[in-house]
Length: 166
Image (cartoon, rainbow, N blue to C red; front, top):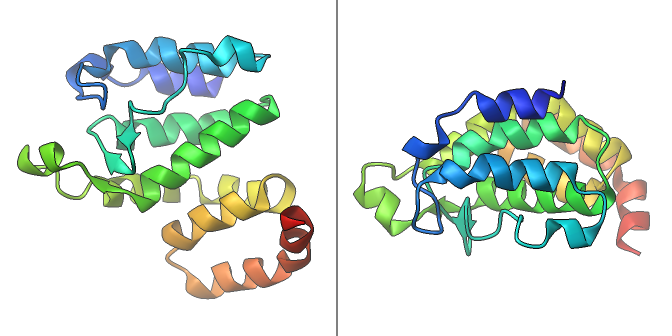
């Protein structure tokens, strides 16, 4: 049993708007295929691009996807899946509500995404310390409200970040 699949099952995706202009009913399958993929070829047609966000413009499904992503990051995932999830998470915490969502009464989806990401802050710091330091720190810069902690970790991980960028 995987926490990411339990978290995925917890949400009523069909009742949420997706970036592909349909309901989010297809997202459990998309997430499942992505999380079960062991080759890049297995992810074809099962990526999150255009569903949670489109050019960093967020849709109603976005904040509900954040805890699924955080749960998945605790699992042993192929590097390409982990990288995709981190990139998507970065877009979710740095984006803004799509115009259609703002008009529907959801003008602050990015704040909802940041709040959801804060619940997994130590997973993000672990990722920074042992995984994709650059993307994890980019996410934490928007998520962590404790600026002193963030600066301490960024400073402590500076050498690792420099190696990662080379």
